[in-house]
Image (tube, rainbow, N blue to C red):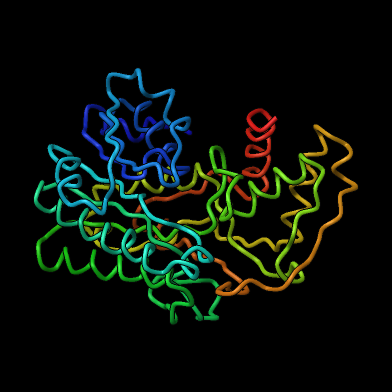
Length: 332
């Protein structure tokens, strides 16, 4: 990724909540490359120490082990920060269905704590991870920011409430925010283990182990799979934009293309068989559709292109190729 356009962040203080997680650690890595002073706040509920191990000796990196559900911790972390990138959350629709209370406590209570702390610390800008799940039962394609439906899971509700709180904190307190509605992000450091592993790292691990991946449904469901470098770019553009009209909006963070689960497994096989020819013969298992899943997801990224000068660097195919190479080196 070309980081020259973001050199304005050199020596700026940036707090990344959930900085030891998949997306957060990639943000920390790129901010450090730019020369920012990075503080990572994480309770390691879903993040991992190994994600940030390479940064610990960097004098521009600070780790705070703490929970966003504790307001005092949030105040301490926000002190003297110029920008906040709020990635900390409990993801996963199935997790939220099984345990809506904890999902609500973290994703709404923790989010509100961070908004209050950012307001009190007078941070310049608060960028937060929103979600494509906010579109809910809206069947319109492509998804356009101003048209949403009813949320289909507790997780989706929490993410929609985040947007409402962010809008209110601007209108009430003048805190500038930008929400990024992530669409099925994948790439290096995404955890393939655990009960709530995302589909791409899970399938990669299963293929590498010569196991048959399970597709929920007939495989026709489609998603706008978004490589991590596109997400990092959107966060950096959201922090650095000088376009006042771009502030206090939510933006789709995606590619603007959709891929079915069948097409996805074909892509994974294509790139994995370069390393192991036996993977080509592994069959796919089909099961019932998953509760809370929407059939199709496709984003319009025209608003982000227009107001944030977003230009996706990775298609699904290019992203899968890079992700497979990373997993092959790190999962063996």
